[in-house]
Amino acid sequence: MLFAITLTLGFVLVAWLVFFKFKWLKFSIPWAILSAFFFLHVLLIFLIGLRFATPYTANARVVQPTIQLVPRLPEPTLVTALLVEPDVLVKKGELLFQFDRKPYEDKVRQLEAELDASKQHVKTLRADTDIAAQKEAYAKATLNYQDYFVRVQQKQGKVGVVATDQVQLAIEQQKLAQAGYDEAIAVALSARIKAESEIQGVNTTVAAIQSQLDVARYYLGNTTMVAPEDGRIVNLQVRPGMVAGEFRIGAIASFICEADRYLLANYDQESLKFVAEGQPVEVALDLYPGQIFTAKVAAVWKANGSGQLLPSGTLPNFQAAAPETPQNQYAVKIVFDAEDQARFPIGAQGAAAIYTGGMKGSWPALRRIGIRTYSWMNWLYPLPF
Image (cartoon, rainbow, N blue to C red; front, side, top):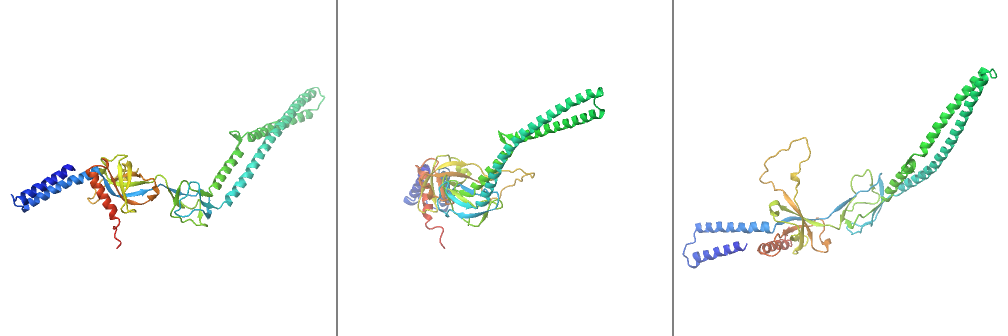
């Protein structure tokens, strides 16, 4: 920049001496055209220097993280109480909304009763197992007796002591005893399977009802919505009597988080050639005419949606862009140095200048004049008429 200023002053001095002081030459139209041509080329030095040494944009805005407040309820539920004021800072864990608890409390009580009943049923199943085992032992003893009785009857039938029909009757009773024993074995096995149906040492029926009870308690806890972190709700349209839950699509409010706010500034891609993380930044917000805020570059987002191709069965068309089509820009994430971050609300817009070589020097001096001019012009522009 010093070279450009020296060159300009030298040309002005020579022109003054030649054309006006000593009048060695007459200042004519050709000389005027030559002078204009010279000054235009010198002006390019200033434009290029400012562009790369101190990138500037008037398209900057404050961004704050937001959380969509969606009721996690399985059925349509009435809003019974509104516990937050619009645009009032709340701390993490403070109450926001209260929903109707009664249907969820009833569900919890119902499942608690079913859980107790299922635990008692487990005791019954274990008792049934013992009974079935005893019946199996009795059936086995009966079968053993019938086997012995048949052998005795057959021996006596051979010597004519017992009639043939008596022997046949004993055989039929043996078959009945065998069927009874088989049935007792099946009943005992069924009782053991029911009693021993467990997952991680817990009866499956008890575990299933316990799981349902845990879900019911979870939904009961969700009938009170609390602040997920420090922040505020601005557009508060929730009213008592409104229905929220499964059949209401989307969030009922947007929660603006206080932490991690930043400035997002759009720059032409060529202006970011020398921009790097940690470089100093000056910001002029339209919300504060005449004020300049210091900041630093946090990150350069070298990504733009124009370069994204979605999976599709259609081949993309590549055509020349119209001359009036604006070029794609990249965004720079900028964080403020001020301790009181609440001064920079979400959506506040303004201008930002990045000083790639530090705050000292000729180019930063010119840019500082420019951004301060922008800030002071906010007292007047936009005009109120």
